[in-house]
Length: 312
Figure: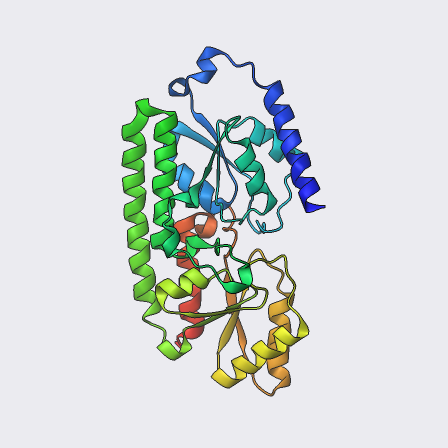
């Protein structure tokens, strides 16, 4: 069924592309108008907005609270994809079947997997992910900085007359990301090493843990497409009690019921663990809020962890 849905999506997009193929020479000249870009996740869209600036109109497909592992495009999304000059997506199978659609579209519409520029030796490939890479690279800010270069290079190739704009924007954004990386390291130091344990509903934070010194535990594995079983909940509850973990965390794009089940299982063992707050994992916050961009989302997450785990 999933392959059939992917195939139907591809056909729909190609039909729209055929219908929209008669463009004027002026419309084809990207130096005369803003580039129409579609981005899948909020994190990818934020990179494109920062690098493209006023030269790029960005449409994001997946808004706040949307799980990219389970996302199903609407008719409106298909129209936006067909009207785009370029599609930016995360890649590494984050977008599930849609990633295959984008690969097959390349040529009709330019598509860019923003993680393609990351050295594969730096990626994690957990055994339970069947030979695929963990796609949640945005939680290691140093890794995510490589996606800025991918977006910059793609925009320069499409619009070489504005190369300086894209280079300057990318340089400025990379400086902000570098400062963010330093901020996370300094904040993490406020948590005692033995308390740097991050427990959430699914394993979205493995790159974060590796980069900033946290042990990471999740109930559902890397993809939320799988369900956590009773045995998983009980095993995690045993671990929390044994280690004396003070807090566990819910995610904005994942239902809270599994984490609440863990909390109840800990309580049944005569112990208590608090829900330390909400973390943003596969989606950013609402537009106009501090968490509505990548920098604010990551700052929120580390600040939430410090408050809940530091004992202050």
